[in-house]
Length: 407
Image 1 (tube, rainbow, N blue to C red):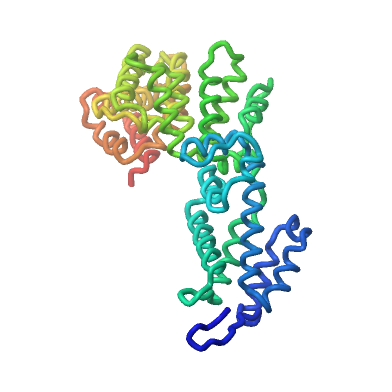
Image 2 (image 1 turned 135 degrees about the horizontal axis):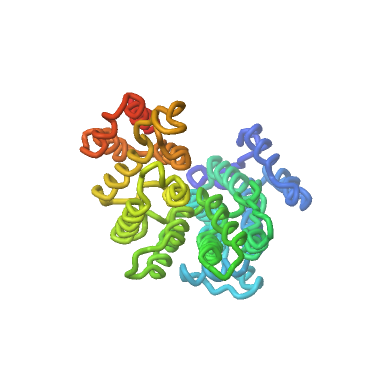
């Protein structure tokens, strides 16, 4: 590289670059590229032509990105290209014809690069163009070489290709006769999958879970799979699932199945407010129909399990409905004074044994809003009468407050 002001030749030697940095970075390159003698060639070039060494490393990174795009799937590449107005992709040869700048964009749009990684690689490409046209206005600095080295190796050459999860992989798992749950690698592959693939997989699971013609074990597997994949699902995918469910529900009161699905995949907050409120209002009416009395314990387990399956009361926006359901839960849990009848001598309180453990789990997940309503419930006439029956009944109400996190 030439210093135009002095007319001298400046050579950025390997010693100009921190030896520990260079050696440490090169050591992280994957074995597949080591076998291609990339490291040897770069090390030979560094002392005499660091610019060429950087360009060779960037070329390797861009070639690696092309391979990773093909491995990830041409179907995803095609979707990403169409969605973001990039050159069309129909076959692997199309990827080879992509410009270096565009292959970085396509990798980002497919989810193979994060936005931060995309920006770093784009900057590397800009530096490379500057290196190719070094003149009086621009000369490569040591920092340029270090930046290219670090980015190409950390972002691309040290990272294994991503095997994207396919719908067929998920279908194979959920359609087995026994309940199956994804391994850690399965979950990681889903989390790394780009938005179009995640959407495809989740909508398949939604369709399967709601298809009454499918065997119960398959529907259950699909439902459980959604719960396991929830943490790795992008918010944009949840929104699209909510829109899909909203169209399915239409103007009707939502049934339990779509609401369970919405909760399992984290799409419940994106459903319309009225849809959620109407569902909880209908649920409240069903609770009243069942009755909170301990003699109705045979009907409590199933209906309370439904409330668990939809995440409790968190997504109900109607305060009056929430208050009504909490009132029912309190009356069901605290029971009534015992001490009479054949079993009365051994039970100071009669309450629903089937409802109590489920109500405990629901109350443990109460948020601040629900806790505040629970604390005020003791002042409601119907609850005040029951709590006044005996100390033992009143203690059960205090136990609920403790479970809800009252301090």
